[in-house]
Structure formats: C-alpha cells, structure tokens
Image 1 (cartoon, helix red, strand yellow):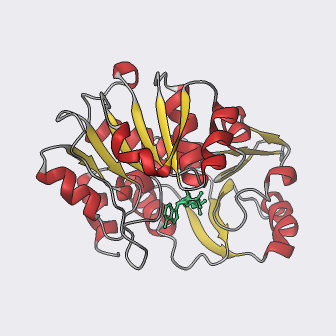
Image 2 (image 1 turned 180 degrees about the horizontal axis):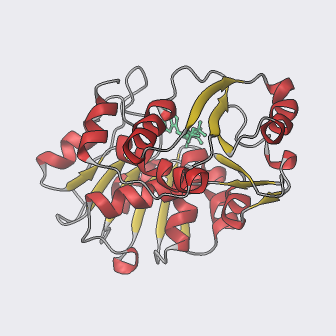
Length: 276
Ligand code: ATR
C-alpha cells in the first residue's frame, strides 16, 4: 500500500488525541503512512490548506480555530457540513480537489449506537442542552436520523431559535430556566455545554422528571464521568460519555483516509483513557 500522510490542523494542536488514535488504528491494520499534528496560525490557514495537495496528503482533520474559516478554502462541502456550517475533515481527492466533511455528529451517533443499542431515533423526544458548535453537529445528525422532536435549551435563547431556523420544525427552542421541566416523555438527554467540565461551572440539572428508561449523554470527557452522568447512573439510566464520541468521530475520517473502516474497541478506549 502507498505511503499517505494525514494530520490535524489547529492552534493549539498539542492536546489533540487524534495522532494517537490514528496511530493505534494504522498499527492495527498495518497501514503505511503518518498522522501529524500541525499547528497553523489563522493567517496561514489558506497556505496550509493549499499545501495538502502539494505534500501528497490524503487529507486532514480540522480543529479550533479553523473549523468555520476553512469552508471557503475548499472546492466542495458535503451537504451535512454545509448545513452545520463547520468542518472537521478535509479530503484530498484523486484529482487534487478538496472536499470538506463534518463527522462530529457521526461520532455522537456512533457512540450512541454502541453504548445504547436499544435506542432508536424515532422512539421519542430528545432534550439537548446548549446551542454551540458541538450542539449544531449533534442536532443536525439527530434530525437527519429522524428524531421527531429536539427540545433545545440554551442560556442565550436566540441561539436556540437560530438552530430551529437552521434545522427545521423538529427543533423546539426553550429557555434555559425551563430545562428541568422539559424532560416529560424524553428518550435521551444530551449535555453539549461546557458545564461539568473540569475547571468550568457546575451544570444544575434536576433529573426527577426524566423517564427511567431514558439515556443520558455528555460530550465532556474530562472528567470521564461528569456530575450529570454520575447522577444519571445513580438513578439507573444508561449513560454515554464524551470519549466515545471523540473516538467514533474518527471512524469515518480513517475510512476516508485509508479505505478501511476501523473499530472502536475496549482496548483502544483504554489506551486513550490512559492518556487523559
Ligand atoms: P462548543 O463549540 O464546544 O459547543 P461553544 O460554541 O462555546 O462551544 O458553546 C458552548 C455552549 O455552552 C453554549 O450553548 C453556551 O451557552 P450560550 O450560547 O448562552 O453561550 C453554553 N454555556 C457555556 N457556559 C454556560 C453557563 N454558565 N450556563 C449555561 N450555558 C452555558
């Protein structure tokens, strides 16, 4: 197999788990190549993106602060990524043109399918806390999967309304104060805010109204078990943490880079966990 490099562009990138994730899979599937963390200043983004083709890269992942600014620099944007308005993957096509994708929502859905196989998109309403970049990709994927109702609670109400405008009438914007009362009949509760992350504020979320068989997801992975997930587990809900989402968003990226759909195994999960 031909040697093909990929990497991640961001600023900073040193904290990224992607190099060790992809290294693990390349070793496992014996794929020649390399995966390189590339610190790129905003004013150098255009040069860096142009350089991918010249350097023979198969593509690259994209992280903060470039996920939006990269959009006009590629030749084609996948419809889901265009709808989300942000990108985490650029592929160099055989003809040298660049296509951009967003696999963050795939990561969420893949993690959900693995952690909660009984859950089905059409089984009922979902509550999403937050309306930032992470919420956008998750809500886009949930709506695309056929979730009938997404109750979206955000501190800044206008951002929740903007999500309805973008993703359609399945999205019901709610005020932040109404989050505790939004849980009736809900099948899944998702926290996409930074509340509960080490060093950030606490998430005040009363779970009394949550049906016992609902699942609870947090996209945070430091700590792995946020106070929300601890409270949910204590009530007997099935839970999903953010590490699984991080690993699963890499699956379609790796497949597009090197043509093999890799698996998120317990061994890989433990290996990444040990680096947190
Ligand atoms: P990301 O791209 O990781 O989603 P973000 O775009 O900064 O990050 O979004 C962070 C989310 O956490 C937002 O929904 C934010 O609410 P606002 O839209 O009102 O800013 C939410 N958030 C952050 N701090 C919060 C707090 N103290 N209380 C409630 N929500 C908070």
